[in-house]
Picture 1: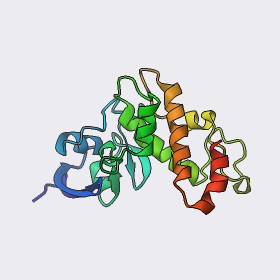
Picture 2 (picture 1 turned 180 degrees about the vertical axis):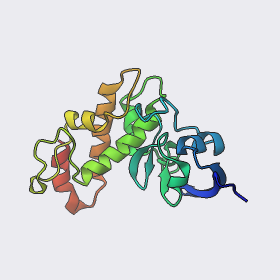
Picture 3 (picture 1 turned 45 degrees about the horizontal axis):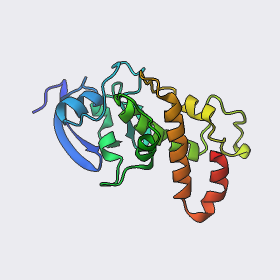
Length: 193
């Protein structure tokens, strides 16, 4: 029986269910790394400032060091271990590999998870702080290097691989557009340019 400061929770991570007892103060990051041995998600600052621990919660990016594990119950959690499709890398992973979007690699799992979220946010038409025209009738903003830098600004890279990271996100966004149904591609390719 769980005490008043702990609970038995079930987390759905990368399509699999994990049931474990956790202290209510346990972060999702610590549950992933310390309890479930999913060590691809990195612990950087442990204060939500570096983005190394970024995962996807219900498809949206979140820094797992600020998310309590108990609050993630019932949500779809995707870590770096779950973004590939078997042996086929996710387009963001492939772009990071092709364009040297990493050096030491420590921040790369968080960068990749964040980039996946960025591309989906952009495709949904969400504006950023640098989007010039935020009126709905203006349509989605172009995914310029400035847009990518602003949208990825919560992820720090100590090695300074930012130029390659921006290029990798842009390439992966183009791949995403190319994989859309034919009717959706026309306007989306213009948005990436």
